[in-house]
Image 1: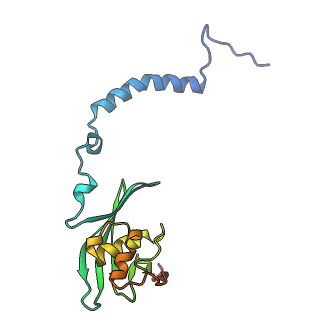
Image 2 (image 1 turned 90 degrees about the horizontal axis):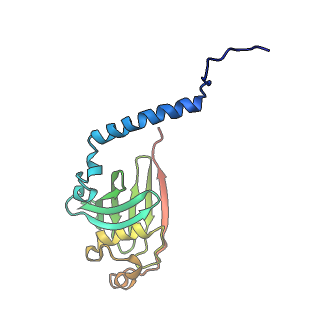
Image 3 (image 1 turned 135 degrees about the horizontal axis):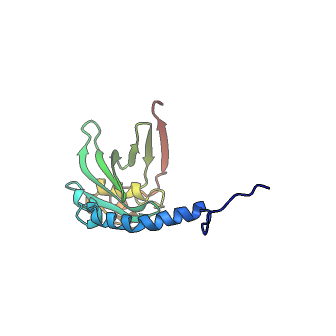
Length: 187
């Protein structure tokens, strides 16, 4: 058995005790340092909100709280497609708590083929719509956009309540809703 001499009254230091002692010594210093530093503008309420950053002509279509935070979706910048009557190009603004994305979609207002074309550089999504038909969580945003572009005076209204308006405009409410995904070139 190996006998090690111990200094008088001293105990060996345990790693946990050293860490706790260091934390207690640094805590007041860290607190003072954090109080001395300027806070970010967002914490002080001085930053511009996303609402102030929205472009001119912006229409809010969807404002809800999701698992990702507050989500606001809207449109602006409608431009008619000259080569395709009844087709509109629109900027879609999706705003989350920490970021904003802007995409360009196309909306078709034809009585025989209402649709929304969306997607990214990797895939194109073509959704054939049924104005005046059944509205579900899966197609609600498509219909909100369609109504805002094709019948602007109905923008922001619940599309499930617009069946009679759709029939007055010539839409049967019985068109099949379909989605086609066209893949773009891979990387």
